[in-house]
Length: 353
Image 1 (cartoon, rainbow, N blue to C red):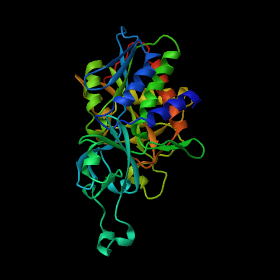
Image 2: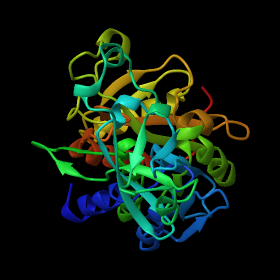
Image 3: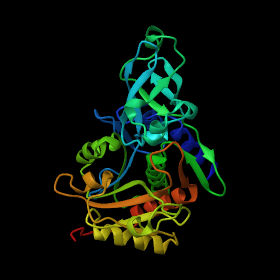
Image 4: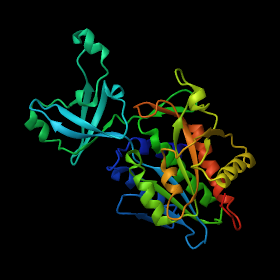
C-alpha cells in the first residue's frame, strides 16, 4: 500500500461514523471522489455515490459501508454519569476499560467506560458478565447540569479512534469493519478508471447504516439499478486461538482477499472473480455461506428484479472491538482484484445462473 493510500485509510479510520451519524466520514469520501468520478451525489439517506462512464448500457456497482458500531447517549444521572444504548452489535465486555469520545455539536467530549474495581467486587459479582445497562461513561462532570451543558441525549459515541501499525503489514483500529472495505471499493474505483476507458458504467457507493440492517445498500442500489454488484466487507479471520475452523472456515490474515460462494453469490460473478485473480496472480481464499450473508450483498442481490452479486471480504481478527486487525496487503490485493474484475466486463454477458 503506497503512502498516500495508507494516509487516506488512516483518515477514514480516525473519523467517526456510527450508524446514522456518518456525515463526517462521508465528507472525506466526497472529497476523495471529487478528483476521480464524473459525478458525485449524496442521497437523502446519506449514501455517497460516485459514477463514471454512466452512458454505458452495463451498470456495475461496488459497495462498501462507511458506518461503524458505536453507542448513543440515553440518560444522564444526577451525578453526571452517562448511560448509553448500543448502535450495532457490541459485547459489553469489550467496552469495560475503554476510552471513548462523545461526538457533540461542539466537538468531541472525552470520557471513559469502567466498572467497580475488582477489589470491591463480591464473589457473585465476579461471576456475572456486565450488561450494557450496567455500564456508564464518566466525562468528569460533577453533576447532571454540568454534563448536560456539553452532552445531549442522542449524541453518538465511539471508542477511541486510533490506528496502530503492528508487525509486517498488519494494522489495528476500531472501525476496520468496514472502513477497510470502504477504502477497497474507493481504491478499486480509482484503479479501474486509471487503466483506460471503462467497459461499463461504474458506480461506487459508500453506504450507510449497514450495522443496523443493511439499510444504505438497499436504497443506493435501488437508485443505481446495477446489473452486477460486489459488496466488500470484512470477514472473520480464524488464524487465532479459540476459533473452530470446522465451523468458521480456514481464513488467515496475509493470504489475500476472501471470495464467498453460496446462494447469496451469483456463480458467474464468483467465477469471474476467481479468473481475474488467477490471470493477475492475486492470491485469494474461499469461504462459504449457505444462507443470505449478514452483509450488503444480501440486499444488493434482491434489488428490483435481482442483481448478479458477489461478496469479497478482507480477513479481520477481533471483529466488533476496538482492536480490529487486518493485513494492509490483503486490502491492497482486494482493490486490485476488483479493478481487474471491472476491466474484464467486456462484451455481452449473461448473468443468469
